[in-house]
Picture 1 (cartoon, rainbow, N blue to C red):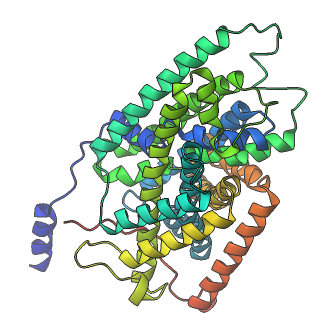
Picture 2 (picture 1 turned 135 degrees about the vertical axis):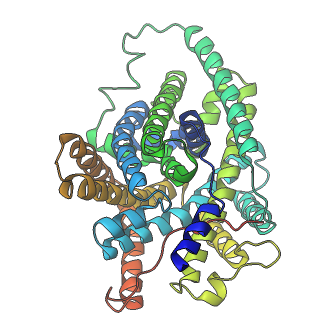
Picture 3 (picture 1 turned 120 degrees about the vertical axis):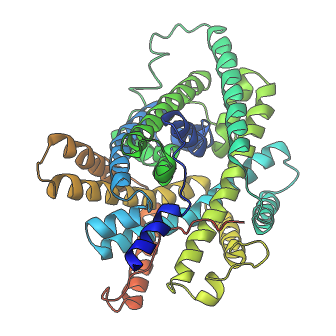
Length: 454
């Protein structure tokens, strides 16, 4: 009798509608990553990669494509969870899952920080009379206040922003082509130098730049969280994840290629953090303000979203008693958001904006992201090759190639980023060992809780 009742309940309970097509999923992925993704980090990439920005973007794309395949396949096995922490913890080892989860916390805490840094640098270019620290306080305060009020952008607004960015990108391409062909170029290597400049090329520098270029693709894994609302998720989640990485990679490479033709790497930028805005201004003076404002809005939106995402992650940890529940597990009864965590993340981001550069913050973020990517590749290798009834080469190459490319990029992060990241991981492992009595008890939960309804 009880079985029959539960069956009826299961059949009549409301379920998510599978309405998202492959095109919808790709559009979502592009909006999350942003079509202007390489513009914010362009100057840092040029500086670290000794001018080979196009090459770093393309190498990073290869590694992310293999990793995207692993994410898409793991989304089949865990359609509702969709996190690197779950994949690694379930498929390999709970303790390794914890390490992966702790690296995710690093990403979530650093993302709003680097957005504050970039927005403050760009705002200072617009209004140099206001010091950097003044803009940092302003943006950290605005992010925090708006998130406390529960303001969030809808999918329609995001789509509108993406369309607006597309128009600005098109304007930049038209102005850049006009600028490039409006000047004579007698040097036969002018058009190939962004890919390979024999006078500036250094393999270690290019790999170091590539380790930062991964930031261009951060967010593609979010497509896996839509598995329950996608049509034919076993096919479309994998395809959308891979195609999103491919499209963003090609568009990003074109953007930075044209930018390098306009502003050769040998010439220093007025401000490395906002270099692309100065490139746009060179092609057509009004674009300095247009592109600068567009990137400011894009990073503003990313910063707000990243802050609430970090707050929700800390809330999940507080709710599961991994962190003090009274503070981190509390929800504002009126706004239905983890207000304490929003304020906490805002303060940490503001303090970080005073001590970190944009480049170092980006590398530290990628320190954690690359650990998570390596974990997902290992989980896919374990599930679909080691434990498979039939071991196919197609289940071997993508995760193995993805793992070793991510490992190579991780090893080529700067020394300060690796030291800071190692300290973060050591603290986390020590905390986890203490919390679980040497990893023998229940592990910390790093899955981000779903947003409450209403």
